[in-house]
Length: 330
Image (tube, rainbow, N blue to C red; front, side, top):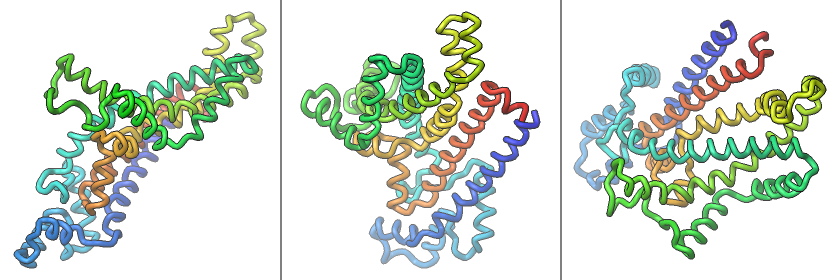
């Protein structure tokens, strides 16, 4: 219980620090987002200083208030769930934009991370258990080769082969065929979503599979030499029980941390994926917000990503305590 309370206190402080950085970093960046908005609307000559000050106050950028006052106003808005209005999509609230985009990122990222983590750990366990075999000799170098391929090149190559040359998947168009289907639970709509998401998910799985497998294999080989594994074998336990219950349970601990971080970053979207495949998501929305100096949007997305990563790491700490009793004792 003391371990959990200490972790809760730590993550509470981390959330406060992240929110503080979330407020100050965009404001230290050069440029005036309100002036950019006015110029974009082509009404600069008709905006009075009073109107421009009103726009600044609307976006939480009222220069008449000190940074300290703005900071506490920002904290108050966050506590009430108000992330402000987007500059680039004015006057749409940031929360509404995030709600529209985050679902696509979570769906794509979660499927890819879960599949790659499960397959990577399984392959790592098997190749370590059968190290020196034909499977280990072929699979380990192949995974090393895949891990060296830049993701964007792999994504472009798969798009060129399967979408352009073979025409098996759509080349562009977002998350589903918007011309022929409307969102719903119909089989046609679900099939369209799967068709548009298959290539992005496949490239994400292939690019991350090698890391999970190689980490698990190396950790598994070290664990197999431990005394408790040798004792389990000496007791005559089945190979499957020794491999999974004794060796893999402890060898998977390093991957748990990486898995928690990967789960947390899912909320932030996969920027390169969404750009290459024209896939809508929170990552591409963040990229656009930075280019447009949309403070409210940048702050909102960064806050969601931070909370997701910290929450995933907190769950990983709890899982660590369950898998490794030494953590509870310490």
